[in-house]
Structures are given as structure tokens and as C-alpha cells.
Image (cartoon, rainbow, N blue to C red; front, side, top):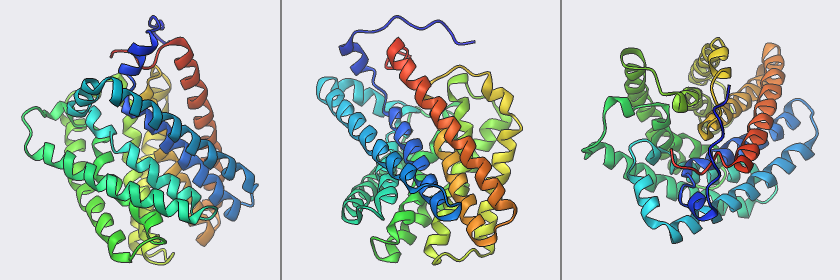
Length: 326
């Protein structure tokens, strides 16, 4: 049962508490758009759905970017506080990842525009990666309780760059980003799993971030196949099936997630599911059989989850449950 809605804050106060994690909504929506565009080619579904979703994702990004720029102008100290927070810091790269995903979505329809978004997103994400890793190395505030799957976003997010980058830049640039994401995925996976196994459970607000565990191997599969000209080799299969296992693991605990209250962090379900759906559609394209059936199932689940998240977010905004002090 959801907790009673907090009293709605004044617009100025709500702007001050506008969280950078809101950009996770763009990641999920852009991921859904890419999944539907892939489903058009693999499953024969209407092309218009993916096209409409990509424009919706772009409009959402523009709206959120404008709001956060207003926050930066009016409440600079609040932004500094958010950037210094040991957990919220990891959500800033959701901005650059949103740009990278929008670039992938628009590659076919507006290639020049997509190239500009990819270039900005890749440069911005590298900057975030250097900044966040520097803060980890020279920290005075991090404890093991701060470790959670959201830590993957700044560093492992580099794996997304090659998905669009292969079409836009020399291959070595994509290999550079892929190498960063892959190597430090294994490092961070070890740290996060240690925290999950031997320390207190994640707080309710962060529990949905467990779905982020799916994203690195699923996106890694997408990037690896792009870097290898569409070939699905042994390593690609290892990445895909690791992501599939994690999807099954989390699905087996579905009731735990259903019982959670809605937070903005609940959007952590969206992009990992989208990445897994796209990866499965690629497997279906090459192998067919059970992967085609699984692709249908995941696309239906993903679309339903995004519809519920979008509706619940709009309701939360109207009720004043979002953009309030935590």
C-alpha cells in the first residue's frame, strides 16, 4: 500500500528538489523506442510505434533538460549538494546516457542530428566517468552501505557508446569506451554483490535498482555484436545468457518488487528490460525459435511496464509526491 501523499510543495521548492534521476525516464522511453524499432524489423510490427516513441523520448529529454537548467540557475547550491551526494552523484550520467540512446533511436531517421547527440553524449559521459571515479578514489565519505547497482551507471554506461558509435566514429573510439565499461563492470559487480551478500539489504527506495544488474551484460551484448559486424560469437552468447539469467533471477522475485511503493527510482526497471528485449530480438533475428517467442514476451512486458511507470509518474507529479525533500 502506498504511503499517504506528502503535501504539495510550492513550485519554487519543487524546482529546488527536482532530482537528476528524473532522466531515467528518458533512458527507459528511448529504450522502448529502440526496442519497437527493432521489433518492426524482426517481428514485423508497425514502424510508426517506434517513430512516435523516439519523438516522445526527445520531447521528454528537452523538457527535463530545461527544468534542470532552471534548477542550476535558481538553486545552484542544491545542484552542488546533489553532485556531492554519495548515491545521487551516480545518476548524473543518466543525462549523457539519454543523449546516447536518443542518438541510437534517431540514427536511421535523422543521422546528422543523431551524430551530434552521440558526440555530445560520449564526451559528456567520459567526463562524468573521470569525475565519478576520481571521487571514488580520493573520497572521504563512501561506505560499503553506499554501494548499490546504480554505481554501474557512470562507468559501465560507457558500454552504450559503441552501440551508436560504430556508425559515427572510427572503431577504436568505440573499443576505448567498450573496454572501460567491460573491465570496470567486473570490478563494480564484485563490490556490489559483496554488499548485497554480506551487508544489510538495500533500502526500499533503492531496491528497484537491482534491475540495473541486467543492463551491463545485455548492453554489452549489443555493443559486442556491433563491434563485430553483427556476428554472434561465443563471447556474445556468454553476455546474452548472463543477462538472461539475471532477468530470470529478478523475475523469480517479482512479488518482492510488486509490493514496493512507487519512487522515481522505480524507473530502474525500464532501461534494463529494454536492453534485454533488444538483445533478445537480435538473437531472434539470428536464431529464431524460442528467442522469437521470448522477444514477444519481453516486448509486451516492457511496453506494459513503461505504460504503468509513465502513468504513475504523471499521477505522482499531480499529487506532489515527486520533487520533494527525501
